[in-house]
Length: 426
Image: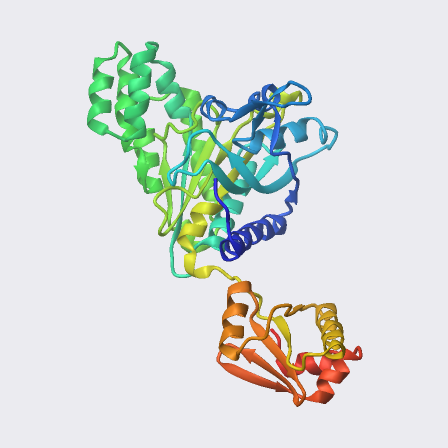
């Protein structure tokens, strides 16, 4: 759990706002869900791993066992199935907020800032295409200016079919761990030791290698002896890839890879799954996929797909991209020092705000120029306007802009345009 001071908070807010702006551009509407709710309601929509990571406690006024949300998707599914169940047609919903998990992630944090979308009521492949396209747009909007982004697309059908054939729990758990590590040698040895049809052993041994360039992976998958429903999943992946080529930017589309042997979430997802990466992050910063069975747990069956973005992971990569102060923010400083001048400055600051800029009157002790610059920089003001008997001076970085008495008087009297033009606020 962490505090975020103004600069770090502004950095994360800017990332969240970029993401939400991108989601809204695609027609997604924001909803806000509670940070905790009754544990049995929340856990109805959680997979085994997420359910185990939920932090539970007894709500003192009701005695109910409640849980801090480890994931927002089940809450969106609940809202869609109940509060919005009467909407005839697909729902496009987005969110931003914190989730809390019992076990920390890669950075040891239990509280994680997320933003994401859920597309509810859209079938395969059109729904998958839109979700992947929005994911690509989110990566493009948040990656470092000079960094690459990539998407990894897969389908749970192959791993699910192979794992369901292994009936021994210990063997299935060991195989799951080996596949998660893509340990080809260990997987091949385990497959050879299992009492299964040759076609299934061949599929299990092939899973760690079903990763890479789309054409190569699809060809390898089609060379295997697969049941019809699993072969259809391979066709779905190819169809989705063809359709996204028209709406994903060319550079990112060239960085798409296929992974048909991924076992992450194969019990939770029901079809296409995907992950997004940006240069500098060691793990995926975006994860999602199709979960057609989740919404029905809250009373209304519906196809669904979506993803969540790890804002904190992106913030660690985009350190140099933090924007702390607005370019049009002004700290107005009294260089005269009497009650009349302070009243005029308050009116001046109000007029600057009314014109759409950021302004506050300095309430501290008198400072020299260097101290004022340092204070403004540390508290988020890009400009310092010092008003004295001979007019005003605006300190902008290393520059000083003079403001005439006439401009100051006009601004204080309710005509701020001249002073704003003089400051050239951006």
